[in-house]
Length: 424
Image 1: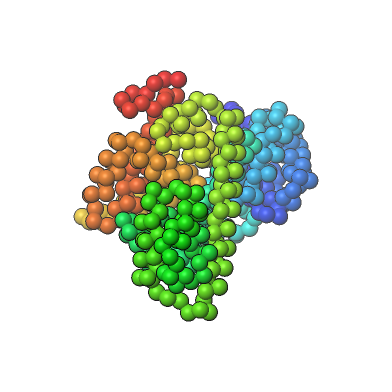
Image 2 (image 1 turned 45 degrees about the horizontal axis):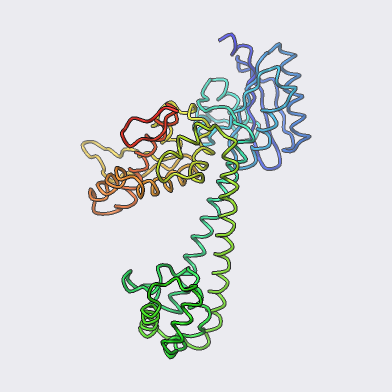
């Protein structure tokens, strides 16, 4: 309590151009109200104003609280957490969930919605000791986070481009896009040989009326002789071409150009993704070795997935339980109940970090392929319902995976299939 009485609570409402801030003491007296530019000179004004206020009111500690507003809160949080002149006052910087502040604001009846009032609400939230998150974790975590989040951006761009490309593949070569697995000439329509077939033959007639020997030679050349049975592949391609719809000649060149362009974009994105993966692995080496070893000891979890999880959760000490970690990732479900009715169809909250949720889902899918226990659990959950089988089973398996992550990181263990991990 004595420490709180000697603390200054500073709430900052962040926007792209300005930062409005309000400073309160423990008795809720407003000591500063000011709006500054969201840049380095503005940050200096904020720091000087806070230091003067601390000295004038004989306060020894300072807590800064600001909403996590996209990228706009990043710079000011870094400056406040590392400024040397603030260090004698033991500053703590907290980036808060805007949804939490929004709900807290409802307790202020008839308050106008202004930037300065928003700053007051944030400062009062800190003064009331409502903050449950850990302080701002600094630039090293941010560096890894920017890499892992950009990798998600690349993955989403790849998915969008491939989805669009599939539509053009169907227009040009309809049967190739919908063939069952056993009848497909290629394992993937985005491989080098499939790309060559789709872009170097202007029309399907050129494929149909090519001699089998010429088509086999083409396949051997483009695949670098990697097909076990190129003659069978050539026959499957010709059959698919004969069964496909024919295009009007006016569409030949435009469709070929769009396909070629899409394949170039996909190749470029995949190349950039590989570069980012190497950079992620390099940056991961600067983090707690125990955390990295614990996650990478799980079969199916490599450096990219481990980095994506670590970048979002920081220290496992930030979470009191695996339930808290699941809530932070938004992998929780709200009950729907009225009277004697309990709905079995409950939606995932998805209120937490979408980036952490992505890496947890991706890592879980890899773990399902590598750990029999998780594969069996996933299949069991798939068999329990008639619809949304994959989504439901994957979400529940991810929830099981979160319990494993929390146990390994909190107890500093390596994964073991015998239920008892090996202590590092």
